[in-house]
Length: 166
Image 1: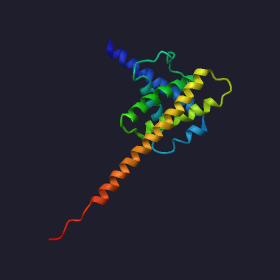
Image 2: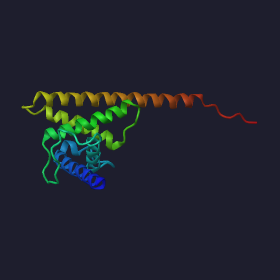
Image 3: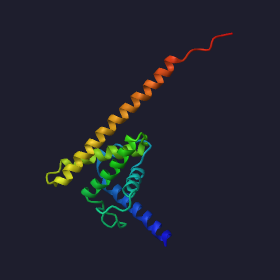
Image 4: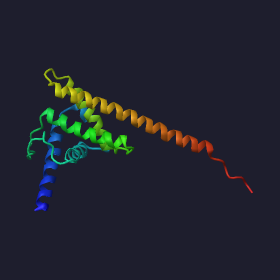
């Protein structure tokens, strides 16, 4: 029975990823981030995996295979959960893959897009502001990490001494 449950769980993740793709794809502003190696499909699968990382969330309605995009607020919750987990990984010193960095970028851009809507609930406004803060803090952590690595490389380069000839 656990095999059937596992297959069902994978089906839900795949369905969520598909609906996320349908929700994000119409936005030309968001599509511009997918001109390199990372495709939107890959990023939406990462988001779906992160959403289900701690089990099925209570806020997620029953995911059904459908050709309809998700509501904007469901996409917001998906991006928030994903960004939160990726931020924790970044704080703990783990580097994010390109697809995971794109999740953070999408989350920030989605929050900005949502804040432009006139009738948002206080909860949605708070989530959007938190997403923007998480994205900003992640950028700061990345810059500090790059600076630290660069300093280490420069220090090693300066300490290097050519071998003396015999």
